[in-house]
Length: 81
Length: 81
DNA sequence: ATGTGACTTCCAGTCCGTA
DNA sequence: GTACGGACTGGAAGTCACA
Image (cartoon, rainbow over all chains, first blue to last red; front, side, top):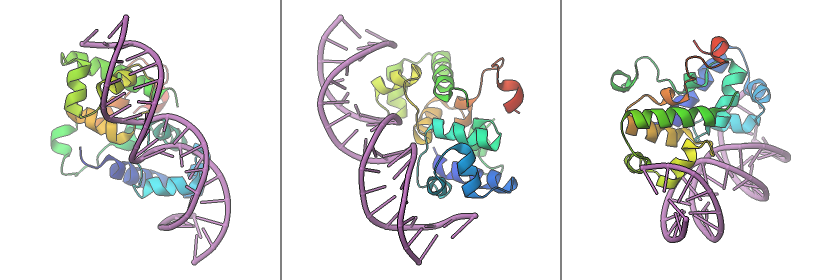
């Protein structure tokens, strides 16, 4: 698999900014530490599905959304949909 | 979020059986431990996205598929799509 | 408001076995 | 073929200080 932590990171950062939230605000809403969220957005960790779930709720998106490849990702053709 | 490990567990077991694979075979193809896969299918662990990715490749599905709620899941109405 | 380093705790993940 | 146990290791989880 191509780099899932990377995909999570970019999805997370985009969704957060779309909502006009700071890392501090999102982290608080998700009940995780601000600096840890920073680490995740820098793709420094392979988060567990439980953490993913907390963030999904805080962003009000289905958890699966955080794993979706961007539209013109090179691998999208074969694996997605 | 409702129980993601539970969702992963049921999705995983269904997809694996649809393909006629044993836990042993799938674990081997995904490069993870056989007994650990058993644990996952019993929802005893919160897997990381990297592990999720390995399993997705082994099953030839997009990683997001493993997090999708079943069609008539109680929470589906609000959060999904 | 975010990046980063240093740190501790605890669980994801491996490997052995038995039933 | 699967469930479950024990013992172990590395890395995710969580906190804090400082730039």
